[in-house]
Length: 171
Image (tube, rainbow, N blue to C red; front, side, top):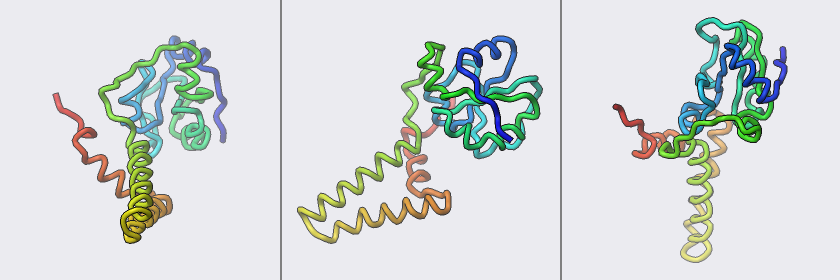
């Protein structure tokens, strides 16, 4: 089962008429940037949408996550459902409103990319100019990323999530 795609302007029209907008990105992505009124239901934990509604509209960042999970989203919706073609990026290009919270940290996945890339680069440079034993650092990071890809569990992401800048401050 596949879900039809609609343009951001068509999605906005349906939302204004009462459709539910569902953001399937992670909570960290949603907290940093979101379409006003969008509900956050990360695709990893989505099984069924609570509440009613005649139309559900799903979006992610670029449209790739929603397209890849269209069958799961259709089952979870239990009503007519659509995907915003191009995700929130297309929404912004269409000039539609987006809320930003730059005080929120960048997504954990991007933090992992930055940390892993920096450690690999550091290990290669230290291995080249200081001691060859430092080549173990990029090997260790590569093994960790391979493990994360195979199992879906990333130790670096878990560690980064514990960092002070990623902790939610309670009010």
